[in-house]
Length: 177
Image (cartoon, rainbow, N blue to C red; front, side, top):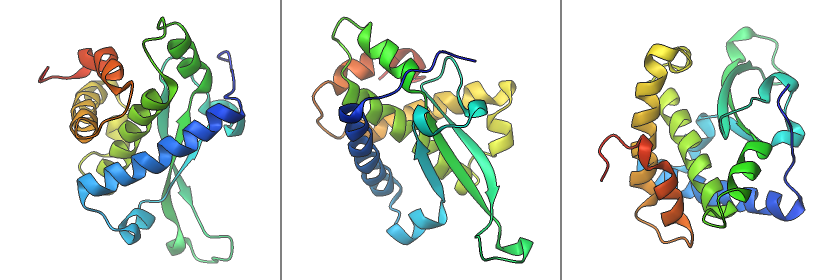
């Protein structure tokens, strides 16, 4: 099992702030109302709340898909897709701490969470099929598309430290603009 470090209380506050900002940015970009967001059911969990199979070594986060059903539902037709963004605290903390002060936690989290929300929107809109996005042959192409969209969404805003995050991720941008 990968080494698991956990965000502290102050860092968890930054996660919550990044999730809130990312939701606004992604909904604005895709012109989605709050009702449309609610149809794309998802949740964000950090390492302290992840199941053991949701903790991975390498990526900063991953989106896992589940079939869920309301507790009071008796029919299978009430089931729905639930996407879980699994934030990998230790991987993020390791990169941010070893970046010689160039990477700050909040802008890095903002990039990661916008990126994962873009995946969820694409799955919900059938612009990408969840099962295909998990297979190696189409996963790399999907990652390039999502990194480009993430950059497009974030380059319109001014957040201290975001430029350094763009430098960190530049290898993922197919258009290199």
